[in-house]
Length: 507
Image (cartoon, rainbow, N blue to C red):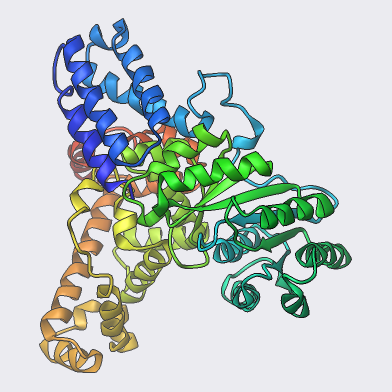
């Protein structure tokens, strides 16, 4: 995501970095490149003008021109303004930054159910997002009911039913996801006025009866210029009184999505926006424009096709990604979701003693796969995103690795030193791979084991352990969220001499 925009920003700001002193001309030239980059990214023209003017006003002050490191100071100004643009629509600091609606989390009511009405254009991914939102809530221990109020598209009722079953069976933790529908109302739709309103009203009664925490209403997709369908939304809003109304927009449609969001908000008071297909949007126009144009915060972003591919929207993290600083905080959060503290500590002990097995190695690969694609995860590391833009990572390599390890005996998986040429040939035949593939895997496993022992000797694993128990804010404070060393302090090579001194003393 943001691949093109990140490249353009990097080129524009690179001209200012490394210089001991910069002039007003340098700043204006760089900002003209930034302006062009934003326009090419399909950011709304008014937003571009306002953003570049604010950055240029700050940059031309003594803050940059008299700074010891003007290039870095310029990047900081752009970074802060990007955050402000997505968090408060570009309002001056302090005016709108603390708005309650800017929190990505959902505000729950007690007693329940908390009613969430989902609306959007046809084809925006609204029904799928309902399923993802149910999975998000289930992971947080909430009971959920999905109500099929999209009577315009017959397949939508069945699709939502399938999603409810998938979330209930595939997502661990939490209660079952309930499903409510009135199939007979699909035939009445278009003939009986208010059929969708009746479904929503009855769904609310059912949710109250079952003591459901959150009720999600999946309404029909519609164009904002369709007066009849927009009137139906207003009727649902009046009859049910949803606590939050979310608009689902497709990031790939760029500025058109933002214009639709503004039109929806004019006719129906929105509480937030959910942007789908965020991982496919290399431009970023919708994410950078929607807050300024609609005045409504982005609550969530869809980052893939799987049910768990829905993330809370954090402006500061997205700003870091745009500027190529990575997003270590989100990476740590993803890891914490997949690995318990007990599992992490147990693996740490094995790694420190050099006793990691092939089974441990495979479990780590599976954990990485659950976190997302390898390219997206590596892109969260500072400075790595740009390097991977033209690299085609083979995601099937994990499948081959799993097949190879699965072809090993229990004893071989526990002790990789036993894997001589004869055993490697047998494993290659059993896994449908080449012997050199098995040899490469063994060599990679040995390198990881050796690195783990060295990291343990330098005290780095203890720092990883400390980070595992930290909040994302604590990790960011260490510098992980701003492109710094996530382990804090000196780099590993700077710690090496101290390791040698300790070793001498122990002898």
